[in-house]
Image (cartoon, rainbow, N blue to C red; front, side, top):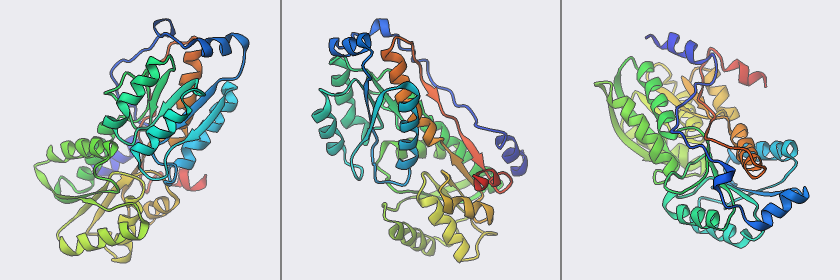
Length: 323
């Protein structure tokens, strides 16, 4: 399929991803007596939403969704989490608040580190769901967000199509050791490996500082001048890669595929310096994190919620720019 046709098909809307069935029934969960009493009395629930880094550029979108759900579900929703990806900080904060939490939604800094805590919270009769970043090793009740491995595959497919099935690709990420990054990279490499003519030359760990991200990409491109594609796994190295292409007038030689809809990314897609970016509906994820918990505590069965993959290219990015 030609790239233009693939992009037009994807631009029709969010592409749903498939999850394993994970239906959770309130009747099967031993809800803490203090929480039962609040439900019976009609007292507003206290939902806590722990995001893995409240300082990143993605957090405000999540927080906006949390606030909307709190109003819709008539609950108190608190958006918490560490500044910077700090697993110990995330664990400590949750442990401090556990006596106040009626329901916990969590996006884990580290799957391994947070899984035992999630299970301890559940054992205390407090419902827990995951959002944005799943924790399948835990006993969490449901997950709201993208299938990160599959979204990586979608990015890899877009990259392969953009390059016409041949070329040298550099993968970029702000945190190569993070579980979300590992999952996305796994999917991206699987999709790229399916194309016999594409070679992944490296995964570049850029760090999180904007200037350092750009410098890391600039230095890597100087060291690898034969790179024809940059595949970013997240919000922040995507615009940096597009900016490098723009400054070096390399849009005809180096193609960029990445994630999210930061303003700078939208502009670079419009100008043709980024070929495609994948949206993961962060506000929807924040909303679902609260909504799933509120419904479950009030007696409704819940299941995993797929927030889909929104693919944006020069042909449809105007929809975002208008907003």
